Image 1 (cartoon, rainbow, N blue to C red):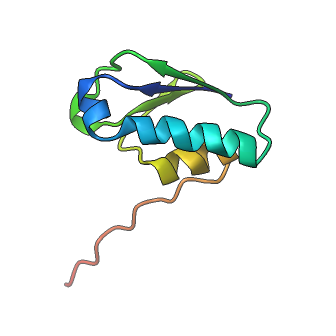
Image 2 (image 1 turned 60 degrees about the vertical axis):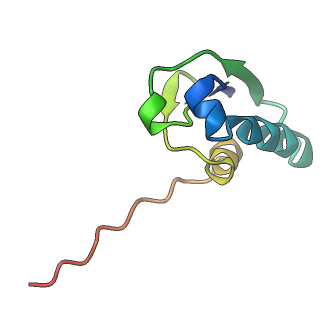
Length: 86
């Protein structure tokens, strides 16, 4: 699995460096030999960052916990739709 974390201005201001650290720590902690972590230039998703690219697929609104779950292969939680009173 190749993971690239955007570390340009907008994503960096939203602490993308913590995402890089979390993935690197998970790689060691969980012995994830198939994970390659790199930083990358701007992905063009500045308004909805931090963003990461996982095997060519861009993922946005990422925080360290979400990144950790992705790297560990845990399924992404779907957002619940708000209850609408009739």
